[in-house]
Image 1 (tube, helix red, strand yellow):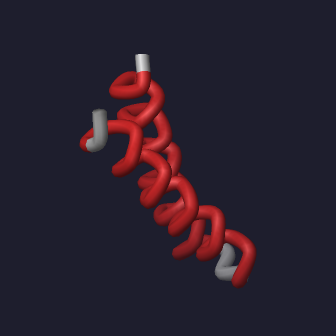
Image 2 (image 1 turned 180 degrees about the vertical axis):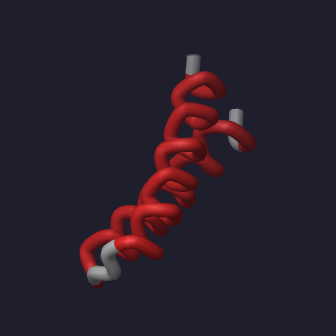
Length: 46
């Protein structure tokens, strides 16, 4: 289940990265970093 959540959060972060090019904000960068770190922990760590 953690791997599925990590995979989903990774693609959410990719979507937020695309959103960043449309509308840039500090909050969106923080959310992208948070989702990438959390998804890495869920996907790679057991």
